[in-house]
Structure formats: C-alpha cells, structure tokens
Amino acid sequence: MVEPGTLEGEPWQMALNGNVQCLRYLYNSGEYSNLDIVLPGGVCIKAHRLILSMKSPVFGAMLMGPMAATGKQLDLPEDPPEIFRKLLDDMYLDQMNLKSVEEALEVYVMARKYLMEPARKTCKQYIVSNLKQETMLAALEFSIVHGDKELKDKCIEYVHSNLKEETTLAALEFSVVHGEKLLKDKCIEMLSRDPDAVMSSETVTRLSKEALRELLKSDDFGFSSEAVPFKGLIAWGRAQLGPEEEEEPSGSGVRQKIGDDLLKEVRFLSMSCDEFVKNVFDTDVLTHTECFHIQRAITGADLSTLPEDTPLNPTREGRAPKLRKREELSCCKLDLSCSSVNYASFSEVALFEGLSSDATTQLHHMDVNRGCGGTLCVINYEGKTISSATSQNHQYTFTRPAVLVKGKKYRVVYCPSRSVELYRGRSGGSQRVGKTTLSWSLGHTCYSYIWEPTSS
Image 1 (spheres, rainbow, N blue to C red):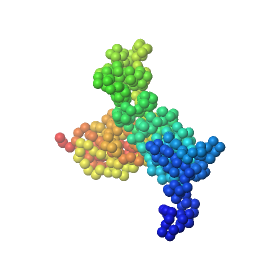
Image 2 (cartoon, one colour):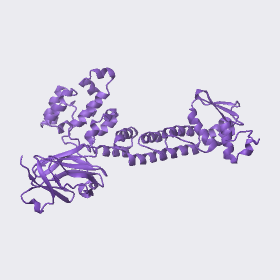
Image 3 (cartoon, rainbow, N blue to C red):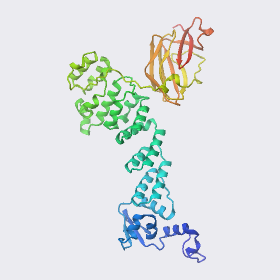
Image 4 (cartoon, one colour):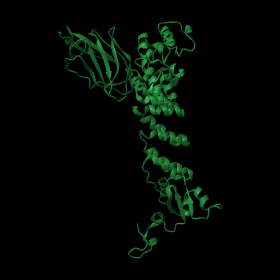
C-alpha cells in the first residue's frame, strides 16, 4: 500500500495505477470519506456515499435520494460488522474472501437486503461449490426459506448424490418437515438397508413424531422382528419425557408421549406370543386388558371381537423390502474374485471374502445339496451380521433379505453344525466321491465346497 507522502514526495494518486488500486486505497485509508457507518458494538467504518450508492439501490435511496439524510453518520444497528465488511469488499474491490458456507449464507442475506445482486450470486456460487455433509441440509433449508429455486435445485442434487448413512436420518427429518417427497423416498430406501440398526440407534430418539411415523409405516423395512420398531418407539417416547418424568418413567407416561396413532403403526399381530410377552408386556405401555386382547388376536381370534379402542394394527404380515426388477440378484454382476479358500478346518468358514455387486442387491437364499446343516451369515463392511439363514429342505432362506449395497464389500460365512474339513472344488469333480457337498447359487452361477467330516 502506497501512503501519501512517500520518500519521493509523490501524491498517492500518482503512485497508484488504475481504478482498482485507487479504490483499494480509498477503502483502506478512508481518504475523502464523507460517511461514518456505525455498526453494532460501536464499530465505525469510514466510507464514501458515491461508492455505496453505485453498488446498492437501497444505499442510493438512503444516501443520495431526495429523502436522503444530510448528516455524516449512518447507523446500521442490525448488521454484524464482520458480515458488512464482506459487502464493502465487494463494493470497493469486486471480491469477497468468504471463509465458510455459514458465512456465505449470512452475506447472502445482507446482499439481498441491500439489493446487491452480483454479491448475492457470488455467495450462491461459493455455497454450491463448498457443500459438504455437515452443511448441505442447512444450505437446502436456507434455499427454501429464501425462495431461491436455483440454489435449492443445486442443493437437492448434491444431497441426492452424496447422502451417507450418518446423515440420512437428519435428511429424513428435513424431507418430512419441508415436504420433499423425492428426498424422503431416497432416505427411506437407504435406511431400509439395515433397518434394525436404524431403529436401535440413539439418533431415532431425536426425530420428530412425523419423521418417526414415516419409518414405522414403511413396508420397506425388513425388521428381524416387529419387536425392533416397538423398542425404538419406546426409546423415542422416553426421550420425550421431561426431567421430572425421567426420574420415574411410567408406562402410561411413555404411552402419552407416543400416542395411540403411532402405537398403531406397530404390527403386533406379526409377532409370536412369546415375542409379544417378552418384548411388550413388561413395558406397561399397553394395559393388561389390551395385552390380553392382542394376544388373543395373535393366536387367531376374530379382530371384530376386540374393543374398538385397542391400539392394534390389523396387519398380520411382517415387513419385507420391496424389490424392483433391476435389484434382483440374478440381474446383477457379482465380484467373486476374492472368494477362494483352498483348504480350511474351522467351525466357521468364509465362503466369500470381499463379495460385492455393481448395483444394490438383495440376497434371499442359498441352495444346499447334501450339506451337514448349520447357519449362513452375511457380514457387512462394518463387521456386523446383516442377515442369517438356517437350513430348510436343502435351502438356506435368510430371515430377511441380505441387502448388498452397491460397491461395498461383504463376507458370506458358513457355520456347519459340526467341525468339518473343507476342500475347495466344483460339483461333479473327482473329490466329490465319498465326501459331502455344499453347493450354493448366486444368480445363475453355482459354487460348491466339498468336505469329509472329521471324527470328534
């Protein structure tokens, strides 16, 4: 920065080149200022009426119009100094050094207030270019509140392409509050991949009642048992209790927070009597009379004989994710390159290591030929068993479809009913003679292991 009175004695106007340098000098030095802008905290910034009026029609009316104040001081008590300085940067320097999406949102609001369209567009471009998981929903909500369709479309596009498991429940909450159906459907689809984990998470307790209802009424959530959504609902109800109620939480108090409308989303009739007694009865959320009538209904009693005020969903079927044709396993390309095991002697054998699919896929069953019994488990990339199956008439049918998420790696583990020695082979091979064969199918491809049981 060249200051007046250099060693050469040149005036600053001669030492600077072009309008940009001159405006920068006026901005930083306050030279020739004819306006003192007073901001919150007593911050005073020297400025020039002409510059502000050139950049903003609002300031033009305030400072240069027929009703303009003649005094030198302009009080702006609602404008934070650090945000207003960003607008001054744009007015004098045609640039804003924005540091974060949060800051850009604040500058956007102030630019709109003073009808500074170029500055508002600069903020919008920064927001879109710097969206992240932690800011995308705030930016999307901002675009809706301020009626900026262009910004909203950009944010929606980013959210749809970058939604991750850790932000899906928050996105669901947002979609319900703002009526964004496409985003809501996207969230439900993602959450349905591991519904037990979703409904058991602490994050569920922070959902609104409306968002929780979307989870409970979905047919796409293949819970391992209807006890899972019931327990999640109870946890949510307890989280709504006040400090005094939390000291001695009663079933009736939790019931009041939940409401019968949500309770009716639980499909008690898909439970067995044992499940109902073990998971529902002792919570005291239902009265003993209601429990008695629901147990009668579970065992086949006519629903018309139940009292009308019984909080009961008449559906007897459990939930299962709906398949679209493109998601059928037989239509997907599976990467089996990491599935080789040459020899093993374990009580647990990995049939596949690193199993993956080029599209989100659901595995329903594996076929067994003359196996020795046992259990198959599908384990996800976090080491969690997402589904298991036991043998029934030579077929292992999973308790709920094992959802293989596109691009993720999975293990398929076989736990035989007794210790065995396993040899990798193909059905029909020479090793098959005198040995027991386990075969399974994935799509149109069949695989097998051949072994001979060891003596115990």
